[in-house]
Length: 321
Image 1 (spheres, rainbow, N blue to C red):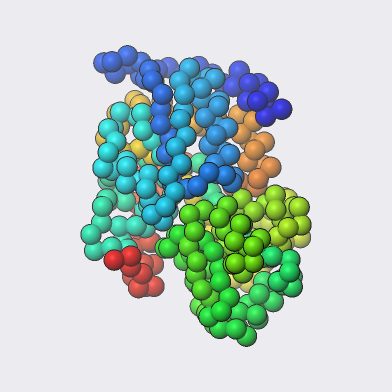
Image 2: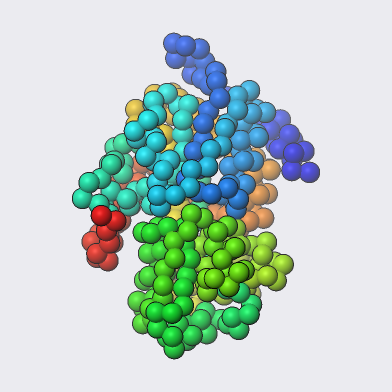
């Protein structure tokens, strides 16, 4: 069924004019797409659907390469240190990449100037997820347990100084509780740990959805602006009075210096795929927010956000050195 949807959606996409750049029209060979997280989960599925459509529609493969570890920055490191600005190596780009230079006295990149911002796509659906055997039915009950056992309950994220790590630490501070942060390479590893009762709470993106729907895990709160269609009875952090919305918008970027024609071609290709029926159905099914921005607006967002990230890192006294 998914393959048929991709075929139908792909057939409806207009043909894009290919930039002619000396060695033939772009793209004339496979394009690598780097994902700095472990395989599995909503984001991985989102990109793999687009990879299938890209191959069918534009005649070249979009090769997905998962590169977990290093707080989600391995792909950015490769863009900056190893990739030519020809459009044939691009990557999933997220807020931790923008934040990273402010966490060290020896930054590897500038958060704006060292990348070509192609298109912002969506954002993560974060939530607090626990094992049913915990006995917690609300976020307040989880906080009460953490307050009664200071420094004993653990929560998992996708890495140190990621957006969900910072948000969870802010919540702990506001609640006056101490919890142990356990960084993993991705949500899939968080799920395995909670199911094995080796971790108390997941504070991470919604690869947990199938497990929650199956009753294996329990969702206490979500961090989106609106309640999720899949879980209308689960409150948001806004509903609970925290005044917080955390989706950590993400998109597609490449190394600095990609030709503007190639940047625009890639932008239009990803935009047309994202607005197709198949991708829209996937986004709706997984409650993925639409955070679309084109190249200029995405670059402006990165510039504005880098100011905020630098301020927050200093305020929380964060460092990876």
